[in-house]
Structures are given as C-alpha cells and as structure tokens.
Image 1 (cartoon, one colour):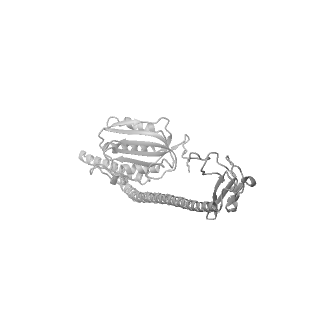
Image 2 (image 1 turned 180 degrees about the vertical axis):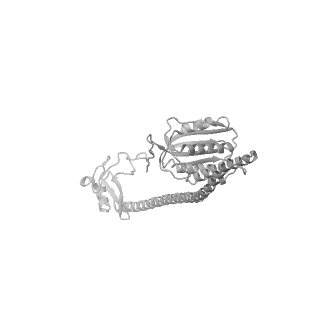
Image 3 (image 1 turned 90 degrees about the vertical axis):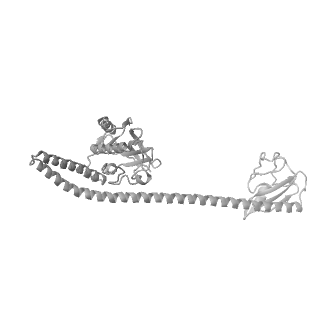
Length: 389
C-alpha cells in the first residue's frame, strides 16, 4: 500500500505528499488492518512490534479500513506524538469518516463505469453507423455494376447481330462499286460506304463497352502513345493541349489501337466541354494504390502498382444527375447529331477489359478530370500487381 493523501507535516502545501510511505499488504499496523479488515487503536507504538516508523515517529495510532463491496480499498490512519491519544470516540468518528469515504468512492466508481459504458455505446453506435454507410455504399456499387453488366450484355448482343448485317451491306456495296459507272451513282455509293464505315466504328465501340471487342495487348510506353497523338493533333485539334509525362513510367500491356481511341475520345470530350481557357491537360504517372488511398473508381481494384493516364479540362463540368450516367451507352448531353454517346462507354469497356478502372472528378463551372488506371507490368510482360492485406 502507498500513501495517496495526507494532512500535516507530510503535506505542508496541500498539494502532494512528500516521501509517501510504502507498506506491503499484511505488514505493519496499516497493512495488518487492511488484511484483517478490523480497526485498531495502538496506545504505545514503541511496544508494538508491527509498527513501521514514518519520517516523523509517533507514540500512538488509530487505523480504520476502507471497505467497498467486500473489497478493501485502503485504510485511514492517524498518528499522535503522545501515548494513548486515541479513544472510543475517536474510533467512532474515524469509522464514520471511513464509511462516508467508502460511499463516496462507490459513487465515483459507478460514475466511472457509467462513463465507460456511455463511451462504449457511443463507439458502438459510430461503428454501426459506419458499417451501415459502408453497406449502403457497397449496395450502390453492386447495383451500378449489375446495371452496367445488363446494359453491356444487351449492347453486346445487339452489336454482334447488327455487325453481321453490316458485313453483308459492306460486301454488297463493294460488289456494286465495280458494276456502276454513272458519276451520280458512284457518289451515292460512296455515301453508303461512308455510312457503313461509321456504322462499323459504332459497332466496334459498342463491342468495346460490352467487353467483347478483340484486343491484342502488347507492352507499350504510354508516354510515347500520348506524345504521338498530341503531335498528330497539334494543328487541327483546337484547344491548347498541355502534356506532363512522368519520368521512368512503368510499362503496361494494352492494345495500342484501343488505347489511341480511348485517349482521342477523352480529348474530344474535353474539347467539347467548352473550356473557357482553351486548355486540356494530359498527364501520366506511376501510382501505388492501397486500401487506405484507393480513390473512387468505376470498379474495384486490387492494391498494387498502376499507371495512371489523366485527361483534365477546365470547362463546364458535369452535373450530379449526369455524372452517374456518363458511361451508359448512347447517353450524351450534346445536341442531337453531335455525338453517338458511345465515347465514354467505349473508354470504360476498354479499361475494364484491360484490368483497370476509371475515376471521375468534376465540378460545375470548373471542369472535369478523367483518370484511367492500368495495371503496371514488369519488363518481361508479367503483371506486377502486388496484393496487400
């Protein structure tokens, strides 16, 4: 037992005990009283073999145990320099003080338990709320994934059947080309062939969204892809295209043609967003994704190494109601005849078919940013994705 409170010379400033006395349980007068749970009055300490002198030796002592719920919490002890200084009246007074102190300690202990229970309830409530929010978010993502999957299956079946019909149309147009000599007829035939080519591209985009397009992935340098496209479109594209390419960019395995088409679609959308500054920013970078820094994406990715392709515009942005539909096939906010509405759906299908995901951030009046994440690969072409718990 250790002194925790004192009154007198050991606590002259009423703050802390000077040289607190330490007595083993069951030793000395106070230790014996605590062990036996019975009060004691010692008339002459020098005649008591259990007496353990403190810094100021005394001649008489009274000691009463503090008992709470059949537990000994400590003792209240008083010493006096004179022999036989304590009597029955002092014992009754100190016993009353001990009982009141024990009752007060019981109240404090109950208050502490109530505080702990309250804090535990708050913690449990917060955990339940977080779990509920997480479940809602998962249900929303599952619903969105199933919705896009259903649309993809429908789009893929339609594109496959329509592609067979379009093949017949294109074949017959080629046969007619050798049979027609009239200039007017040739012009009409050329219009038909151009329409068939546009239809072929439309079908290809639909198949890309439904993840049924045939891709031939190969090791590519994404920096070179971006540089090549920007150089080709430097004069005729319109807005100012700023490029920021990361050094020592990791390799990725992608279909080069599909990659070109995806980037061109994003650049076209950025241009059509009507940027006030006439700027489009394209950048690349190496990204290590973990559970703690995973951004909001169209689909879940495993933690690991990814190469990010970012296309950012500073235009009108996308409204909250439209941002959840931008990847739906045939959805477009452009005027009738200005677009097929398959650009972003094709981008999403290509990225997901390549093992990646798309992230979108947008703000009305400030523009939109599209991030494409592709799994990084090693020099031999193997996936370098590293799963972490």
